[in-house]
Length: 338
Image 1 (cartoon, helix red, strand yellow):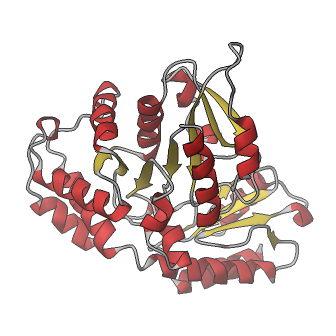
Image 2 (tube, helix red, strand yellow; image 1 turned 120 degrees about the vertical axis):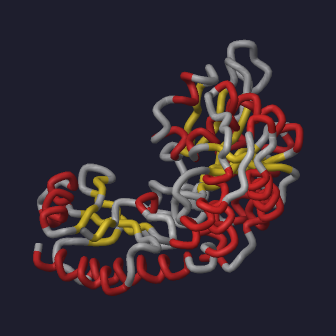
């Protein structure tokens, strides 16, 4: 099978497996795991923040950020198709007791004027705006890169209103590599950030949240409350270190393969790519085939290709380091046959 469902399906590299085996470990709840500490220090430096915390998943990291920033009764502003709103099981309300206020963006980017207008005033009938969340790259916008200039403008709006900014940066390194920028150029316009180690960077488990020392101290307690306190977790941190030191630059290959895949799909009758392929996600429209996306996904599976339905007539294809150019060509040949 050629697995184009997600960059979460990657297997750990041989170097990662060896690092896991040889990892020096200790009890991280007591802050005694040296490999976890090394990973967190490295991540904080890369992200330009004072401190960082290893968490089990991107969703856990995002929810800890909301729990740390907000209090029950707050309102959180975020883009209408953002992962925190769309794909995290309603956790933002279930755990934190906050409500969401969604804003329509363009390619996942909210207009700063719309954000400004959505911030609540002093009326006792209204909730307080407790947090603004951004997502970069934006998953449902097809891996779209939110421009640094847009992030800066929203950050200035938030700063003037004394509201923190949290960035769901699950695929932030994809944005940085595609733009030829340091991740710090993006994170400088955030108070906190979450990055996934287990997507394009290839680690088997885990994410990082980063922010000020005060934020991480509070976040550590919320991680414990959510059952995220880990013991000899260095075996999980070791591949994360390799992810951050050896797997970032090669993301450019995934982007090249995604663009190549998109060009090939656009040459197949009845199919069209509906997103500007900024990074490693390709959104394919099946409308002209006269077939809904879930049925088309089944036809792809029969042909040896795994994909996901991303809407009534949209199929998502995602490239990653376990997919090479030869496999992309095999996929295109199978799609042509279909």
